[in-house]
Image (cartoon, rainbow, N blue to C red):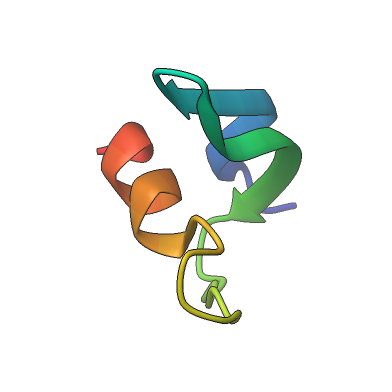
Length: 52
């Protein structure tokens, strides 16, 4: 059974009064590939920056 390589639980990030990422949760197991899809301003880049 593969172990979790990345785990995010209720991840939230704000720029002042603007909530860029609002309570997202996910887990990525070893060997899995994760992609973020969405429109501009959806918080994709912010999520990756918070995780790194």
